[in-house]
Image (tube, rainbow, N blue to C red):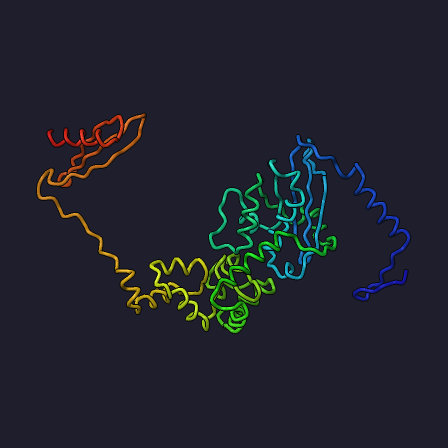
Length: 368
């Protein structure tokens, strides 16, 4: 074989190298390395992602505490996936591994190992997903809810099995269906806007306030808090040049008036709630309030809130009495009377809280 050079270091694939390579392959395929699936033994799934691939190893924990692999798989990321942030690639590695080993994992308790601490926090079985997480993460989390797992952090030095496969992935032509479905959902949300995707992408690229955020999302680089409005970067994602915060599309300044006019066209009484379901920008609530304040139709449709009314002070005992139910407690209910003037309480035990029982209790209290 003709020697090849990389970084000015000659590389020679010799006969001894070929023999060693074949022996490693044979050993990895032998029963001394792999173990058969046993429903009685604990299951462990280790996943990892590199900038260009994902790898996952399904293992049993033997009686002596050692881990022995049952099967291992890897996948080369496509161009879109390679642009994901590292936390997204790590999350995708988990979904990829569970989908590939679905027949082993579904309906069984297993331990999920990752060497990415943020992913462990995001998919923790004891914590809820942040409300404004990127749509991709929300779909991943929904998928994982079907499985009974405990996610744990494992340092990279102890995570070599999955790490090795993520760095030597098998070439694949077709992307995983999960990513395709999520990308389609994110794109469909953008396409519901009263402006085109091209206009949004062009306006976002020209918006100086999100320039660094846009660049960081596109290239998977860290973005300072001041350049992402002080919001957790895991809430943002990038689709077709458009920034999304969770499932809401970021609207650049030049298009905000058009979007607000579209939302405002029906003079809906819950305009803020409607807007929050689709679009976002900094101080969006303030802009909506200014729009509604200057619209006569909205003022008629959305009357100002009436001021809170406080009870007047009672002038004498039992001038006004406040009544409420309590219970059930030990199979009983209670009706509580409190005098507004003296705060004197009276409590009667009831067998139920029907209309007839309530009227009778109140009548007796008045007579007393």
